[in-house]
Length: 283
Image 1: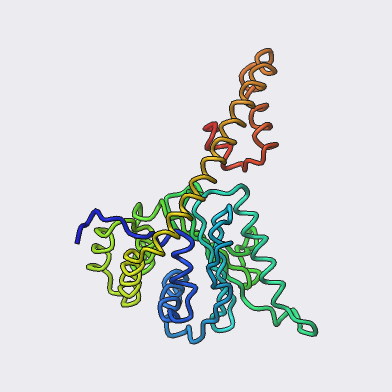
Image 2: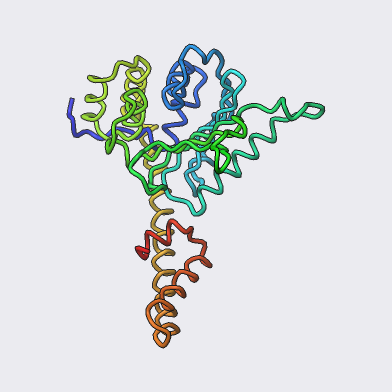
């Protein structure tokens, strides 16, 4: 096999959904969730999958937003993979969590019947200012750090940080597999992993990589996402240029600090998050 040969990327939403949104792959899904949430594989006895169909309309969607909802032994697990950065991603994730959590309460049920709701966000961009690729959030009391409830659990896995630190081999096997883009990377993972389901997924990726119809879907989807990224990048550059021009005109008399404030405010008005603003102007 040619190590440099390109494969269909598991991080692409349509491929991810073919693997983890398939009723025939419940063993793979259970092993994947077990590794990412660090829970015993044997504790996952039932996996119910919703929203599994990949339609032409889905391929044409502007944003890469995969939404897999799993019922894992009474816990609701929402899995999302996000390729391109979106504004206010943290807030959107919390909103999604709240919708899933509250929608589970049926008429006549008590609040205590609400299920633990876990959101897994696999993202292809840096979101937090840290070296760790895995961040886990829950509700804690500010001083005592006492957990209010275990019903809220939100995980972020930042793919670009995988490899900077080593902390969990099974977790990293899956994340490296999601990151893989060449046959050589698949071979390296296959030789070192001890997880049968990872090896099974590698076989699936190779089969999809040799399927001309799937490769055409991948080409169309990637083109759509590249177009989106280019449009967003152009809008961002335009916003920065406009903000700098106006900021400089209004801020020269008041000094550099006032100019900086005007630029920051302009970027906020255009919908940039505080993290994005910080990245753009190196605040």
